Image (cartoon, rainbow, N blue to C red; front, side):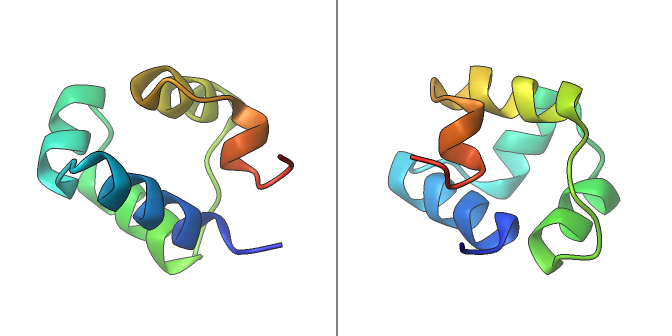
Length: 66
């Protein structure tokens, strides 16, 4: 299974969404977002749901289960 940060980078690239746009529209702090990308932390279930809603995908997809 690929790390969450790698999957997040991939979906940002596939959708043409900049990191800046994503954090501004989701109101997720830069430091939290950066920690996800670098694998220092993992999103809470609430944030996983927020990310899935933003990108129109499932939490399972974000977690690499599908």
